[in-house]
Amino acid sequence: MFENITKEFIRTHEFSADVASDEHNAQSFRLMPNRNLPPAPDELQAELRKKFAAIMATTFKKNFAQMDSCCNISEAAMRKYLNGSRPIKFETVAKFCIGAKLSVEKLCELAKLCGHIVSPEIYRLDAVVVDTLKCGEDINDFYEVTNELGLTDIWRERSR
Image 1 (cartoon, one colour):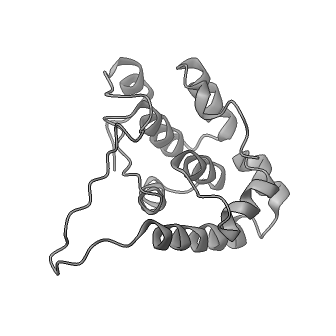
Image 2: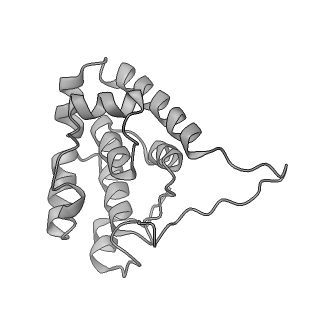
Protein backbone atom coordinates (compact mmCIF):
# COMPACT_ATOMS: atom_id res chain seq x y z
CA MET A 1 0.00 0.00 0.00
CA PHE A 2 1.38 3.41 -1.01
CA GLU A 3 4.57 1.88 -2.43
CA ASN A 4 5.44 5.14 -4.21
CA ILE A 5 5.58 7.12 -0.96
CA THR A 6 9.26 7.61 -0.08
CA LYS A 7 11.40 10.38 1.33
CA GLU A 8 12.35 11.31 -2.23
CA PHE A 9 8.66 11.53 -3.17
CA ILE A 10 8.05 13.78 -0.14
CA ARG A 11 10.94 16.08 -1.13
CA THR A 12 9.92 16.45 -4.79
CA HIS A 13 6.14 16.09 -4.96
CA GLU A 14 3.81 19.09 -5.24
CA PHE A 15 1.19 18.54 -2.52
CA SER A 16 -2.23 20.21 -2.51
CA ALA A 17 -1.78 21.06 1.18
CA ASP A 18 0.54 20.31 4.06
CA VAL A 19 -2.25 19.02 6.28
CA ALA A 20 -5.93 18.26 5.86
CA SER A 21 -8.30 20.91 7.17
CA ASP A 22 -11.96 21.74 6.95
CA GLU A 23 -11.27 23.54 3.68
CA HIS A 24 -9.28 20.57 2.29
CA ASN A 25 -11.20 17.56 3.50
CA ALA A 26 -10.27 14.32 1.72
CA GLN A 27 -13.29 12.48 3.02
CA SER A 28 -16.57 12.52 1.15
CA PHE A 29 -19.25 10.16 2.32
CA ARG A 30 -21.81 8.95 -0.18
CA LEU A 31 -24.95 7.00 0.32
CA MET A 32 -24.11 3.36 0.56
CA PRO A 33 -25.74 0.71 -1.67
CA ASN A 34 -28.38 0.00 0.97
CA ARG A 35 -29.09 3.75 1.04
CA ASN A 36 -28.07 4.14 4.69
CA LEU A 37 -26.10 7.13 5.83
CA PRO A 38 -22.63 6.49 7.27
CA PRO A 39 -22.24 6.27 11.05
CA ALA A 40 -22.37 9.54 12.98
CA PRO A 41 -19.04 11.08 14.06
CA ASP A 42 -19.81 10.19 17.71
CA GLU A 43 -20.21 6.53 16.77
CA LEU A 44 -16.94 6.61 14.85
CA GLN A 45 -15.13 8.23 17.79
CA ALA A 46 -16.54 5.57 20.14
CA GLU A 47 -15.22 2.84 17.84
CA LEU A 48 -11.86 4.63 17.62
CA ARG A 49 -11.65 4.83 21.43
CA LYS A 50 -12.30 1.06 21.64
CA LYS A 51 -9.53 0.36 19.14
CA PHE A 52 -7.11 2.68 20.96
CA ALA A 53 -7.89 0.90 24.26
CA ALA A 54 -7.31 -2.52 22.67
CA ILE A 55 -3.98 -1.40 21.20
CA MET A 56 -3.00 0.13 24.56
CA ALA A 57 -3.72 -3.22 26.22
CA THR A 58 -1.81 -5.36 23.74
CA THR A 59 1.05 -3.15 22.56
CA PHE A 60 1.77 -1.13 25.69
CA LYS A 61 0.32 -3.53 28.30
CA LYS A 62 -1.76 -0.58 29.59
CA ASN A 63 1.48 1.18 30.57
CA PHE A 64 0.83 4.88 30.01
CA ALA A 65 4.47 5.85 30.63
CA GLN A 66 5.63 3.50 27.87
CA MET A 67 2.90 4.79 25.55
CA ASP A 68 3.93 8.38 26.34
CA SER A 69 7.60 7.73 25.56
CA CYS A 70 6.78 5.91 22.30
CA CYS A 71 3.92 8.11 21.04
CA ASN A 72 4.55 11.44 22.78
CA ILE A 73 0.97 11.48 24.05
CA SER A 74 0.69 12.16 27.76
CA GLU A 75 -1.26 9.92 30.10
CA ALA A 76 -3.66 12.78 30.88
CA ALA A 77 -4.37 13.36 27.19
CA MET A 78 -4.79 9.65 26.47
CA ARG A 79 -7.21 9.26 29.35
CA LYS A 80 -9.28 12.15 27.92
CA TYR A 81 -9.24 10.49 24.50
CA LEU A 82 -10.26 7.13 25.94
CA ASN A 83 -13.08 8.49 28.11
CA GLY A 84 -14.44 10.60 25.27
CA SER A 85 -13.92 14.03 26.83
CA ARG A 86 -11.53 14.97 23.99
CA PRO A 87 -12.02 14.01 20.33
CA ILE A 88 -9.25 12.03 18.69
CA LYS A 89 -7.86 13.87 15.65
CA PHE A 90 -5.67 12.59 12.83
CA GLU A 91 -2.47 14.01 14.33
CA THR A 92 -3.08 11.90 17.46
CA VAL A 93 -3.87 8.82 15.37
CA ALA A 94 -0.63 9.39 13.44
CA LYS A 95 1.52 9.68 16.58
CA PHE A 96 -0.22 6.68 18.15
CA CYS A 97 0.32 4.51 15.08
CA ILE A 98 3.97 5.52 14.80
CA GLY A 99 4.63 4.90 18.49
CA ALA A 100 2.85 1.55 18.45
CA LYS A 101 4.64 0.57 15.20
CA LEU A 102 1.35 -0.22 13.49
CA SER A 103 0.93 -0.95 9.80
CA VAL A 104 -0.08 1.57 7.15
CA GLU A 105 -3.30 -0.41 6.76
CA LYS A 106 -4.08 0.03 10.46
CA LEU A 107 -3.29 3.76 10.17
CA CYS A 108 -5.85 4.03 7.35
CA GLU A 109 -8.44 2.13 9.37
CA LEU A 110 -8.00 4.29 12.48
CA ALA A 111 -7.77 7.55 10.52
CA LYS A 112 -11.07 6.82 8.80
CA LEU A 113 -12.70 6.55 12.23
CA CYS A 114 -11.63 10.12 13.03
CA GLY A 115 -13.01 11.32 9.70
CA HIS A 116 -9.80 11.40 7.68
CA ILE A 117 -8.93 9.42 4.58
CA VAL A 118 -5.15 8.98 4.42
CA SER A 119 -4.10 10.69 1.19
CA PRO A 120 -0.30 10.85 0.91
CA GLU A 121 -0.47 12.09 -2.68
CA ILE A 122 -2.50 15.11 -1.51
CA TYR A 123 -1.28 15.95 2.02
CA ARG A 124 2.39 16.25 2.96
CA LEU A 125 1.74 15.17 6.57
CA ASP A 126 0.00 12.00 5.40
CA ALA A 127 3.00 11.19 3.21
CA VAL A 128 5.40 11.69 6.12
CA VAL A 129 3.31 9.46 8.39
CA VAL A 130 3.07 6.72 5.76
CA ASP A 131 6.82 6.86 5.07
CA THR A 132 7.63 6.81 8.79
CA LEU A 133 5.51 3.68 9.27
CA LYS A 134 6.88 1.96 6.16
CA CYS A 135 10.47 2.60 7.29
CA GLY A 136 9.80 1.44 10.87
CA GLU A 137 10.99 4.77 12.27
CA ASP A 138 10.03 6.10 15.69
CA ILE A 139 8.31 9.25 16.94
CA ASN A 140 11.60 11.17 17.14
CA ASP A 141 12.33 10.42 13.48
CA PHE A 142 8.82 11.60 12.64
CA TYR A 143 9.35 14.88 14.50
CA GLU A 144 12.72 15.38 12.85
CA VAL A 145 11.25 15.02 9.36
CA THR A 146 8.24 17.23 10.12
CA ASN A 147 10.59 19.85 11.52
CA GLU A 148 12.78 19.74 8.39
CA LEU A 149 9.67 20.20 6.25
CA GLY A 150 8.33 23.09 8.32
CA LEU A 151 5.34 21.16 9.65
CA THR A 152 6.06 22.10 13.25
CA ASP A 153 2.51 23.34 13.90
CA ILE A 154 1.33 19.76 14.22
CA TRP A 155 3.60 19.01 17.14
CA ARG A 156 4.52 22.37 18.64
CA GLU A 157 2.60 21.41 21.76
CA ARG A 158 2.52 17.86 23.03
CA SER A 159 -0.88 16.24 23.35
CA ARG A 160 -1.56 17.30 26.91
